[in-house]
Image (tube, rainbow, N blue to C red; front, top):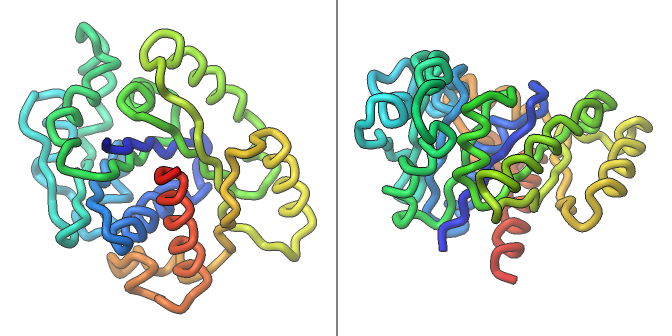
Length: 250
């Protein structure tokens, strides 16, 4: 079975794209075949791997009906990139019958080739995110340990309830993880406690610590493992990747 995971949070700046990149690399380093799907019109995930302004992107597959363009990062890690064209996809798909299922139809054609598909959702709750939540088998929510991460989270939960009721009855929020965490900061510890109370056993034990190497790595089109293999960022994403694999083996 292919695990299709949408990594979603409509609040920007929580380390969502950084997490998609480094979890994907982490899973591939553990021997799994992984496809990263960039569904954000900002295309930061694509840029992080050096695929900036590609001619063909996931837009073409969703709107034009072409084959999904897939670029190899390594033998076990592939990327379906985005570009700026994706910014008009919601408008162009708005009148399409079954518009919420377009991404699912695209991914259904390739998912059998992978153990994991990770979808980098845009920081919004529009049609692209709804497509991701309809196509996936589960949802992970990255949260930075700040007050505003909790505020407004109820909107995402409400969308999830509607998706589950109307479009994807199997989908669940199965994972929540903390990013930019500093145990020395009181508010970080307090928010961590609140998140664990609200999400109970869905919170991963691994906390992604605040680490400047995670900010620097994409500048040189590198993941954290290539850029700073001995850093806290590399250690944390390796441990989180192992947690994810263990969760799917139980």
